[in-house]
Length: 178
Image 1 (cartoon, rainbow, N blue to C red):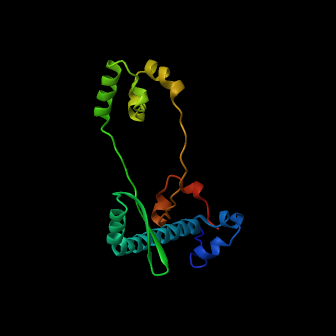
Image 2 (cartoon, one colour):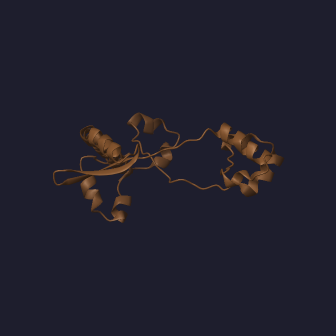
Image 3 (tube, rainbow, N blue to C red):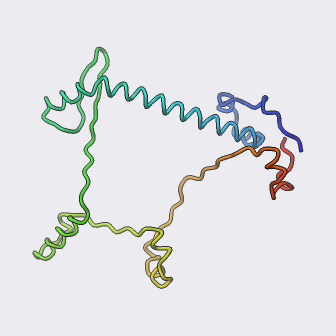
C-alpha cells in the first residue's frame, strides 16, 4: 500500500486559493489533516475572540451600567464614546414564562368566558423519542402534522494507523492512496 507523504500537502492558506476541483482531488489523508488544521484554527480564533470580548466587557461594564441608569433602563442598548470610538453596549432582555402557570391562567380565562388566545400563544410539541415509542395507530394519526427537515451534514476524517488499516474489514476496499 502506498502512503502519501504528508510533508507536501497544501496549507490552509494555499487551499483557500485552490479551485474546489483540486481540493476534492487531494488525498483523503491531506483532507483529514486540513480539516483538523481548520478546526484547530477556528477553535483558537474563538478562544482569542472570547478573551478580547471579555476584556472589552470588563473595560466598559460599569460605564454601560451607568449609561443605562441615566437612561432609566435596566436592559437594552446604550451608546457612549471612548475617545474616537463609539461603544454600543447591549444587554438583551430574555423573558421566560412558567408554562404551568400560563396554562392555569389560560384555563381561568376560558372558564371566565373569554378567549385565552387573545392573551397567550399556545404551541404544541412532540418529543421525537416519544413519537417513536407510540403505537403505530397513534403515529399514523400524527403523521400529517409531522415535518422532518435535515440539518447540515458534517464529516469528520480520521487517519487510520497502519495497524488499523491492515486490520480493517474494509482493507481491500481502502485501496492505495495517491
